[in-house]
Amino acid sequence: MHKRPPKKFHPEPFEYHQEIELRIDSLTNLGQGVGRVDGWVVFVPYALPGELVKTRIFRNDKNHSQGDLVEILERSEDRVEPGCPLFGECGGCQYQHLSYQKQLAWKTRQVWELLKHMAGEERDVNFCESSDQIWNYRSKITPHFDRPRDGVISEIGFLRAGRRQILNVEKCPIAMDEINEALPAVHADVRASAKQFRRGATVLLRATEGRVERNPKAIAREQVGDVKFDFVAGEFFQNNPFILEKFTGYVGEKALAGGAKYLVDAYCGAGLFGLCLAGRFEKVMGVEVNEAGAKWAKNNVELNELKNVSILQADAEEIFKEIDTPAGETVVIIDPPRKGSTPEFLAQLIEFGPERVVYVSCDPATQVRDYKILRDGGYILEEVQPFDLFPHTRHVENVMILVKG
Image (tube, rainbow, N blue to C red; front, side, top):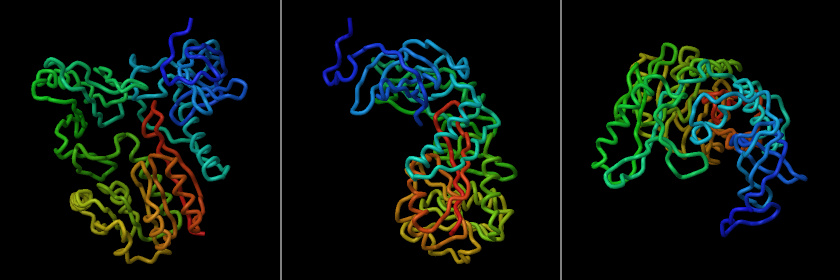
């Protein structure tokens, strides 16, 4: 007897809550298992490639169905015990049930598949570089809670997987130890202050210099190698400090590979790449359109007493206006937000015509989209290197090395 379907449920090709068996053959970039029944695609969260599973269908879309994992009939040898008791309920992690080496292999493959399907290129992608620390690595988390009911705040944590409902999280094994030590007191403080809240809110926990900062406007500090960075605790800074030296080192090595003397760090933010690589170039120019970001980058140049680094605040329409170095001896690093670069920025970059471009991205799909524009503008893709900044999650950071053709 099937449960009554929701009003908008489409009953083809499966009935609501029909249970089917299928073999999982791959993972999506959201971390879901993918299998096929007579050529029809079915997505099953938490199922792994190679597994034979039983799934209960809850949705039929135009070209695929979605089901919940009911039973694993044949288990993958890559399946491991999750490190968190909330895995599967909490929406924060997607891969804790997959061995770490296989996580890296799938992230590598996902970048390869994006290049194939979006850019029409089948090419080598370097194996995803691992984080030195794969648990307790996150230096910032932002639990949230809904508005108090009858003066009481209940769940404080993260969204449940696939639902707009908050799950109470008292410990997070991918957050740094300092954060987990602070969490019980934070929960107690928030609940004791329930009367101050008319609506839900987000709590900041940022690990900095051995303590946990909760004020989003306070100054936090991170150190990468010998370089110190001050920034506003609630603002963006890479949240896995255990991989940053390796990450910036690779970017620097590839930026230098063409023999360029000058470095432009576009979207420089607090100055991560430009400042870490300043010792390797004659002159470094960080460019930032955000006034507050440019201010912090300038502060960090002074903090580290770097004489060959200048920070330029630019209008989005004239990013390279004040860059006075020869394009043939200049390398540009770009690290845009998740949505990628704008066509206007890419047009300016192509017109400036640097000797090489190192494109760092937290979303390889928007990166590949932008790469197609740079390819049309005469750039050749020389190397692709993913980095695992967020183990046990679906996220992958990717670096593309492009040279002027």
